Image (cartoon, rainbow, N blue to C red; front, side, top):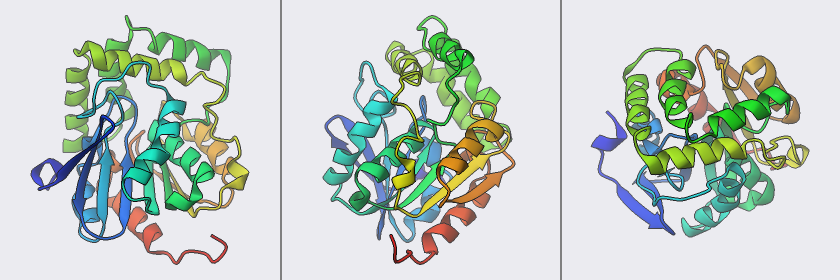
Amino acid sequence: MYYRDMASDVLKLGGVAVHKTGAGPGIVLLHSNGGDHRDFDAIIPALARTRTVYAIDWPGHGDSDPAADVTACGLADLLPSLLEDLGGGPFALVGNSVGGFAALRTALARPDLVSRLVLVDPGGFTPRTPFMFATCRLFGSERVAPTVMRQLPRLYLRRPGPGVAAVRERAATASRSPGQVDTFAAMWRSFADPAHDGRRGAEQLTVPTLLIWGKRDPVLPWLIDGRRAAKALPGSTVVTMPCGHQPHIEMPEDFLNVLEEFLAEPTPASA
């Protein structure tokens, strides 16, 4: 059963669409660049049995209003105010890719808003090399971006399944929308910003943290980005999975098992 088949409320907070369902402690789902709330279709029904689930569409994505010059750091700056508008929580945050970077920065800046932090192949841990800058510049080109939007999900989603096919289909549709292409390209350009650094201040993190990484992720490889993230977050629980960039799409049942076990753990007194 998928989230789009469920009754839900859609909130609009300053042009940002938030899809709400379920009841109980709040959990907020944050998607990657080029995705939307439907990236979490396969896990929301189970989460909504015991929690209030808020699946956010970032500006310029999904049902949110169009937005120009969307950046990774801009999303990180936006997230605390969104959480305050949702009642202040504290919330469990589950963030994939750029969503993970935003979740991490929020947990560092506003730990009062965050009860648990789940980072899924998060951005912000890529070594700053000439190759990285060239990739961000190339993928951030509005001439190249439509092709990248279509092809990246075919590259980084490594296991077949209905969720994977749906993501690839949505990416192909989005690649024909000039507004969504502009947003996608602007985000890629922003990844080269020196402030897009997940290691900055990470040693001050006090929120219980789970780091999940697909070991076959070709965009943010485990051996490079993943290990840098684990080293920067030494107090986190680290789980690797035999899949690509989006374990919650590629291996939803296994992902849910890991997530539910982490959410059920007692909160350390130090937190």
